[in-house]
Length: 71
Image 1: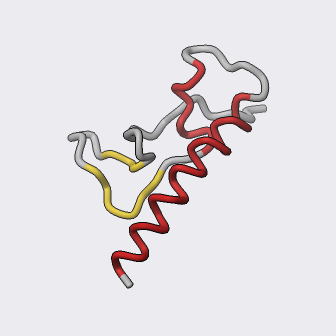
Image 2: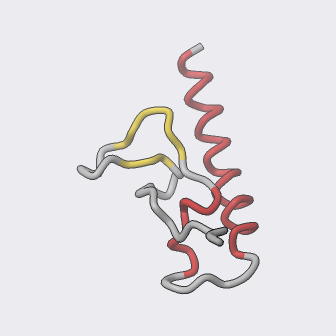
Image 3: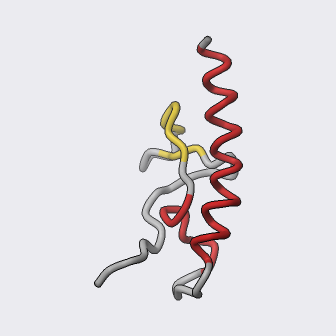
């Protein structure tokens, strides 16, 4: 069965999701397995945990900042 996604979302260093044109998609952030480029072309066991923690934290901060600006 399939249990891992090797990337899929284009994003910047602030975990903001990007359109194909490279423009930021407002209020959409990337975290977890969709950020897969960290480990290259091969899955290494346990990487999804570090992707979730690292980009989850970055995305969470970005989302909180975005929400504060909209409040």
